[in-house]
Length: 233
Image 1 (spheres, helix red, strand yellow):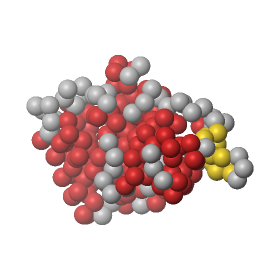
Image 2 (image 1 turned 135 degrees about the vertical axis):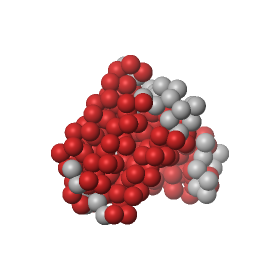
Image 3 (image 1 turned 180 degrees about the vertical axis):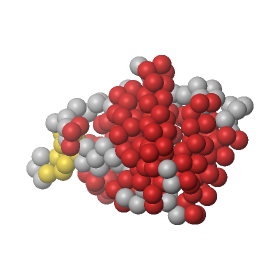
């Protein structure tokens, strides 16, 4: 599905991007702009715009007299939300989910501990509101509604940490949470224990208990890894 407002080059990206991240064009493959324009039935200028976006993600590099070359995976901007989305939509999904969840387990507990020290009253209120929203949507197969509050909860934690590097990971965490839901790597209803832990994290942050906030958040991320062992081995 194309993202609204991106036009023809967006439609090209919606096909070419997932094909590259899925390995249909292995690293070192040379793509000819003229040939791609014919294949996608678009103008060369549209194709060049699509290539520029792929270059910004470090998926390809364009050189005169050579063409557009697919770069090795270790050079990709793996934190780009669109790259994450494409990888989650393909055969790379299990590995991508696992690597992102391991990243969460390394970052979020520390961020929660910092949030307990630095969160404003407004951020504490927002965190509580998100946790209560998760509770309200935790039964009756309301995963989409649950996801909205879950993503917001973790964004607040990362932002309230006061660390701008953590805060910038909000989009990354949102993509892995969305990926778990949209690709059915979730139980029909969230784990009740995980829901309760989110409520307890909000309480710990509000009370300024950094040790407890970190410990509880670590339980959440450990649980997310255990879910992957069951649902996306």
